[in-house]
Length: 228
Image (cartoon, rainbow, N blue to C red):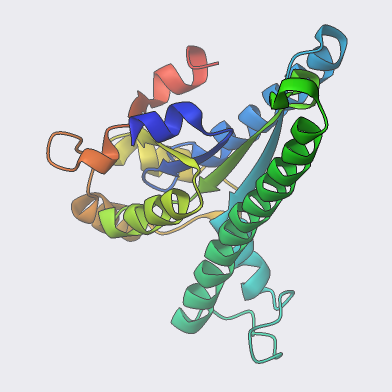
């Protein structure tokens, strides 16, 4: 897996942690940082990074407001419904898979184009234009408190040849509850949900699960003051 991560030009970054830990803030800062970097990259002729942020909470909110159509073509009501929650997650997973599939299609087209170029040159050497090299970062932003949730994304990344990395934003319950109260009212969850999720949370464990070897853990303090 590490070798695949080193070779791939696409990375699926999965954020996990309790509600209110700051995951979405991290993702948005990352998008902002990469966009600023890309502006400098144009001047320095360095590879660009295309970043896609898939926020599960935002998608769930869209479903709850009825602004996203379900698979049947009907919209959901604003009231909370487990069916809405499930449909929103499926929609988010579909977005991620769609990005990975598009990436695979682009790579195939690029390889075919490179092969034709190589065949036309003496010696048949493959010529790579480093100026056109583009990296992609796909950020999956959710609580992902069950390991099985993260593993399903790991399998998707591996099946499409993308690198896989996890960022666990670690907070205690009190910090998470405090952070949750700073979110917009419509995005807040109850203290009970945070407490229950903390009890169920399965932290990344690379010693037992090798596929979690590319995991990074950050605390609330290091996330805001040091990570960037």
